[in-house]
Image (tube, rainbow, N blue to C red; front, side, top):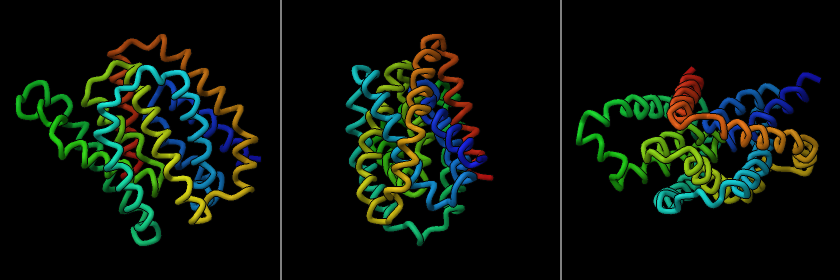
Length: 240
């Protein structure tokens, strides 16, 4: 009974994260791991994420900034392949600590960028997009935890909230779709897990709908602060 409640909560939060509060999605990962074994939770969560991605893209597709997507996607695909090879070879805890530290370091740079000219140009350096794209690909393949990485990148680009959500929606739809054959090959996605996903799909859609309603009432400055707070919480969660 408790496991079903946790899975239902994960479904609702997944939808909310996809359409209003990016960064919250990483909180779903430990909740899902509490409901089912860690390896099984990865395969159970991916189709849920895809349902939310499709909904978010359907609603926000016109707001995507494709120049940012093309900058990240090739590196993210490379990161997915690296993550696929690294599964079982790299300790999950080591990966989480590394990603958490990177997210906190990049968050710390945000208030400095407005004051230091050299740092202001940092997000537009070619290596910056390559690094974050690789990290997003690796972490999404290994732990479904690329949300704070993508949030950091889009915050650095200073996108308005709708462009932020629309660009992130397309990014995660594409990378999560690419992950599917890898996950099937690793036996993470099975018929049983897909049946469970179908059962909880209405809660994902409810979360998406609630997110759309919520985003309309969140001012731009508050949205940016919420994303930074959620990214920081996610990073601290990854560290500890």
